[in-house]
Length: 410
Ligand SMILES: [Zn+2]
Image: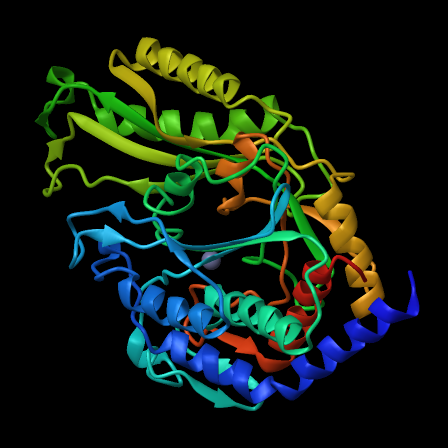
């Protein structure tokens, strides 16, 4: 490394420090927009996409739009805003525009869509998830350009819709547009630790199972004439609950918890009155399975248990898959992971750890297509909570990491 680029990097960082108020202002502007997806009862990301496109144009960039058709929102389109700079293998910064509903709005310290800066934190829905990343990526790019520095690599910026409700009109749609080169890599700033020292490289597979028991409804005084689906269902539920952790006991220290998990969750209501023996019983499991376990093996075992229940109780018990999502981990020696680690050491004096998580991020569809993805940012993990917030210090510090990556040097 020569002196020249090192000086320029410092200059970019100084500009980021000086632009703190501007970063906060853009985060506040973003979070005043109610960009809730239609599946959650909102009108989508249109207004927020216009805001971001305006900022990109102010930077002299030419944002492209990739609109996914969706009749449920005004205008019928879900916007995905993209900037491509340079040619060849790009490093993509992938952020999302949509937010989840506030939940228990009266419980908030602020009106969730009137974000407020208090004690070094910006409170409001969408501040951490994912406004902080949008503001930091844009702020980093602005600082690089203002400093007169040149990008050290080809980069892409993507501000996508629909992350909170499956990404079908967002990242998954973009993946079908032929936009990404085979050697592109991705940084998804949508999850992280308070110290900024966790790079997520792996996700457990998500597997939702529904266990249905069909018996025979009868008067509760005449069980001899019925087949109690509730009793058989309760048996099956506890059998699955006790068996799956024993059959799939592996552990992987990158994850918290380190094992696969199999949680009974939703339970459908059966009869409304006490004196009827239920003819049907339906319960659900949310399973988060380590990448080393094949989800189809979990399904096979659950179905064996259903068959055993059918035989024991004279009912018809079945297990079906409601949802299944798995993605291969990004290797720890993938260039994007190695480079991000180096930048975090150089810029933030951190020794990052590679971790796995149980929840799915937008990294999954990219990893399924073979792209390396690092998921990283600095947050207190308040996403989706009441009183969601983003720390201003994290906003500034993350912008420096993004700028260093854009410059291609630490
Ligand atoms: Zn998010």
